[in-house]
Image (cartoon, rainbow, N blue to C red; front, top):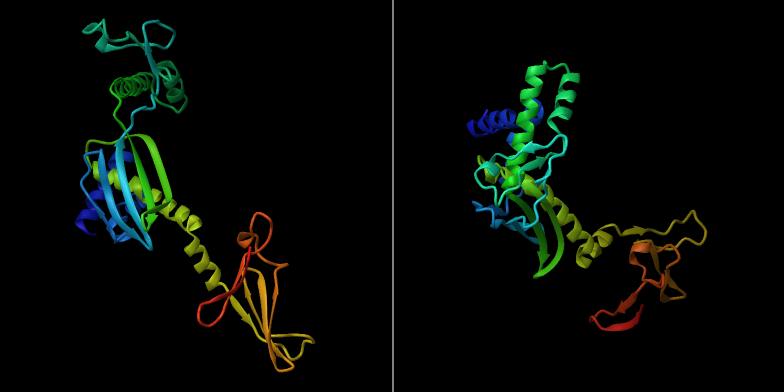
Length: 275
């Protein structure tokens, strides 16, 4: 196994206790291989993390500081059951609240840990560690959000955002890039839905030719695209074009349930248009 992959695998197992199979898949998930045309930079948490292209779209990945962090608990100066004293209060009583009210109290943590079979002393020690870590996080919140935009010709067509997460001190860039990968896929998917040229391409690729069937009475050569059937045939020596919209897909219909049509002759001149 490649040394880089092995180190990533060991670190992920150590930090998350994830199953070996999941950790190995994560370790092999090299962002450069997933999106080879995106250049990943070193982030100071308030800058562009990645920039490049995915297919026809320009991608920008940004990491920014969360101005309104999501807290796990709350601070005030009123004691209630389950509250924990804030150690900072003893040295700064004028500017610091005394009590921290965790989302889940030490007692509630202990109960859950004991029910899982943990010894009382170990359960109390671990529960206290949970709450003290939570308090420190809420006292000095450093949370960030990642945003991804997908554009074409300077027109933003898709975006995706995730916020309210902490960035680990070690391997911060790997953590951020891992979070960004799914967001890129989401932004590109939205861009494809909003991109008229991409929709046209999908519809045009799905077009099919239905040849005349001599065994079927009244059969004529037909091109079917987005449910619209266009019959092109000769009748009494005249090239005839007959269009049927009753089976047109809703995706190509207007708000009035009509299908926009433009007829273009060989030189590119529009001879008929209707919406």
